Length: 134
Image (tube, rainbow, N blue to C red):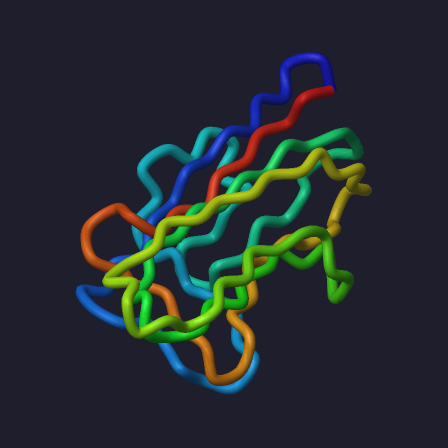
């Protein structure tokens, strides 16, 4: 697809702690950019419209006294992750990670929050972004 353009950035719309839950996909409800409409803010799922190499990044903010275990998943396969230990002395944390991922048309990418962990959703501090490289 010579003219396919796929670019998105989405944020959580929550104001406060997101989690703890059982293993669950984070719902990034506010799409700041969604060229190609491959990201669905109603489900939190990115669906590859074409085969290709995609770049994904995700960032989070969290309270330092709680655990963070956040990872994007290709279909149900772990890609990369963020993990932070809970500490009493640490008021807050920020973390991020990114990966290039080869996807086939229809593959789905979500960001999963592990059981008994959390992230903070105030403003635009927890985000999920991606774009089609080639």
